[in-house]
Image (cartoon, rainbow, N blue to C red):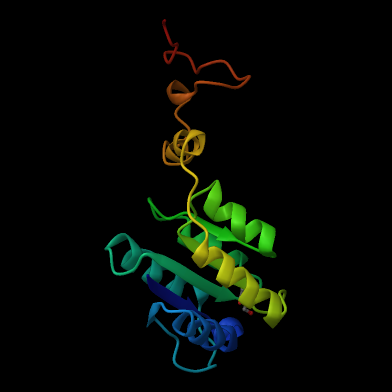
Length: 164
Ligand code: RB5
């Protein structure tokens, strides 16, 4: 697969390490920066990677900042991006299996290097299960229009009643 990777200064060392790991496990890696540990703003790199992913320049993305939180917030502003902040093997596996996450976010200051490699390996190797999860993932993109609800406890918004 083609993997896009980017970080901020707090994730720089992990970007280098995880990029190398992805290459070693047979992937093509496109490094979108930064090129050194100088302080930068994480949204700049999250937005660049999200745009590149949507443009089809990669199959999956990896973003690393201090906590992974800012990167996931910024990347998820882009329609079609499903960025998952993963802390362990379980979250990495189910982010792919159930959520069809296409961007992995990791905290370089919160996750140890061994666990980060494990998370990456599992994220890149696990397929989306599809089936019932397909409908749920599609609903993520629906901007919460009450008319799109097929389940739940909230009544439809006025004017959005569904008639069967
Ligand atoms: C940078 O100090 C830090 O705020 C950033 O890497 C990240 O953790 C933001 O979410």
